[in-house]
Amino acid sequence: MDPVAAQDVLTGYRAPSQLVLDKVIDRVDRHCAAFIALSPFAALATADADGWPDVSPRGGAPGFVHVLDEHRLALPDRQGNNRVDGLRNAAANPRAALLFLVPGVEETLKVFGTTSLVGADDLGIDFTEFGRPPRSVLVLQVQRAYFQCGKAVMRSRLWDPDTRVDRGRLTPFGQVLKDHCRLDTPLPDDAALRAELVTEL
Image (cartoon, rainbow, N blue to C red; front, top):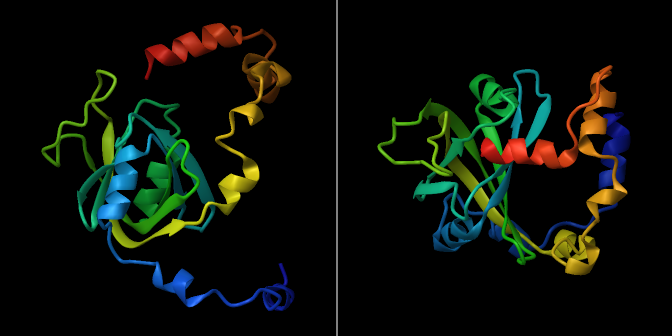
């Protein structure tokens, strides 16, 4: 991207209002904590040492991300595909962000900071969920937090039941994996794949 051309494009945007600037805080206050306590889903954004980004979906029971205090969040790492891209990134580049969603709520919460990776027992907290302890815990030292307005969720109609997509409109995921991995043999059907995932939660 041409930096000069990009700056020319950016000049077409109006300056943010003072309210938009002032809503950024340096901690997790009671409003942020209440939102996190109701959130069953977050997206973890990290980047490797060269700056290449990754966004990883994280989920659990509401409040699966623990508020340790105003300046620290704890994100347990659950059983996944063992790529651990986000954790490897955090080990190389500690800057990270979390985007929290609450079903039915149009606003989202963004929290930025630096990370440290600790053992599952290092914080003296029982992080057991779905009958299993986490493999590790990512601690985010909070530097910025703010609520994002609901325009994107409103435009997408994300929580509108009428916009739910019938899974049958997409290729079965087993076939997607077969094609992407160039496998000669078919994988189990989606029902079998989902049943296997449930046992690993």
